[in-house]
Image (cartoon, rainbow, N blue to C red; front, top):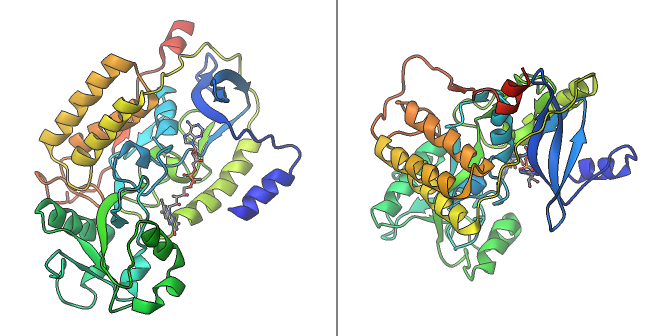
Length: 369
Ligand SMILES: Cc1cc2nc3c(=O)[nH]c(=O)nc-3n(C[C@H](O)[C@H](O)[C@H](O)COP(=O)(O)OP(=O)(O)OC[C@H]3O[C@@H](n4cnc5c(N)ncnc54)[C@H](O)[C@@H]3O)c2cc1C
């Protein structure tokens, strides 16, 4: 990351706005994306940019969940704004939950890396019983299975802890300095006590449908990194390959976007309102409760009713649309697959199928025709 930042800063033709927030994508009468509206500075004054291509790299959607390991600024807004431009959204229900976020009341929750379990740290409940059984490799199952075990232990009131005392002990500060520092900041010494853990939103496999060059279904619009759904992560990303995807596909998308030409006059576009802080907090709690590790039709319907209510009260915020895309697709997928687990449909369908969502064409484009 520091190498990329240094290269960008050194390139005179790249202008960096640290204070910008994407509010809308602009389109010409043919539907081609021809720019973006950015809110800048503390007052959020709107600036419209025109461009031959727009590349979205807005990350995941962890900020839509109360329990998350990602920064709260990541609210799926790029996905929502792409959807509003009529772009195909792929498998938005595929969200990954990490089993060992450290539960010390921080937002985002610090991560107790899987490498701790690789070194022999064990998941136990409050009584010291193994959560996933006694075998040495019992805790090394895929993320969704371990996340459900942690989630179940907490729901049953047994608690869930990662015990690194025997396996790592005094080596902790040298072997895992970042995790050690996070624990110590919260007043917890992992050499002496087990680390309280919870399952938390960690990665969005779904998102803006994009091909191997980052091209979306909307001309002029590209998506790379976690906001894109290239399909490479299926329904359950394997650890440590999202940065690889971002680098490989980002390079290809940059080259393809640089070759774009043309585009007509941008049509006027609707600017989505922001969700007030208390409404966002309510949404995040409901997303973790109903679109989290374990989902049911009943819970997802409750969540969608809340999204309806918040939208009626506060307008069509991009974060609400992102939450709706995830919740509706999770309701419609009546099976369990990877990170998406339906307690009322625990089986995996024999035939794997994608969810493809495409919203109606924007009103401004309809009017222009
Ligand atoms: C704790 C943790 C550990 C991880 N460890 C690994 C690992 O070891 N290996 C690995 O491969 N992956 C790991 N991941 C996943 C990986 O970090 C992410 O998938 C990756 O950083 C995504 O990169 P990105 O550039 O797509 O998005 P991000 O790095 O999330 O950047 C997105 C940017 O877009 C900005 N943004 C969002 N919305 C808007 C908007 N409306 N307007 C303007 N800007 C906006 C955000 O503020 C942010 O700066 C980890 C993730 C977490 C949370």
